[in-house]
Length: 261
Ligand SMILES: O=C(O)[C@H](O)[C@@H](O)[C@H](O)[C@H](O)COP(=O)(O)O
Image 1: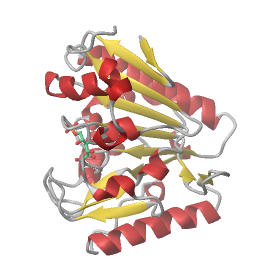
Image 2: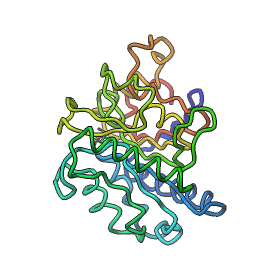
Image 3: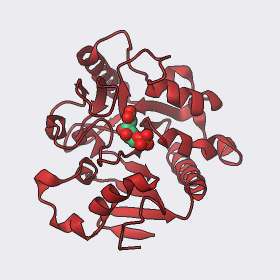
């Protein structure tokens, strides 16, 4: 394990070991929170993260989690029908959600009948409704909604959610959920949480696996980290939790260019 300011970096020899630890940490956090709270609010990304969650839906973890208290959201979603192969909802449903007894009305998919602008407005309105009903907490200092856990992946360019390097959305300060129509990662039309929401999370588990992420991991966690001008920061380097814990789950390949181990 290495540590970087307020970030914890867990490094595993294999993706298999990583996925077991991810299941352990997720189940433990779920149990900690559901022991005193009626809800556990969890945000998913798309991509390979869903496969890395496979151990959580198997023994012994699956039986230790109070799934009835889970409320599930997406940090970003492609604006496609829910049964489309590009849908992050479909990916999570097939690989994770269909295997655990989370009540269907606690899984918050986007409205796939709307264009990106409308889908972002609709999702933000849904989050605001859940604040009013007490399912979601808000930050006393910023007013943005606090999720108990965000389970995120990262792209080779250092993007998280649909927040890409050099894109104006990186600087969004007001919206909770916004849209992008020119995503460099296809498909181009998506909705995404903004940094103010990501940065009030209570916990982020960021999963990085594979050699294609090694350069971005080196930039984010290596010595360069301290020298970056803010304009040149990778999106992942803009994660700065107001009051939460940020843990990297990395395999050897993703950390192969990192000097600190
Ligand atoms: O919809 C998406 O594209 C994802 O939510 C995205 O943010 C993803 O998490 C990263 O791009 C990593 O994806 P991979 O794990 O597939 O590389």
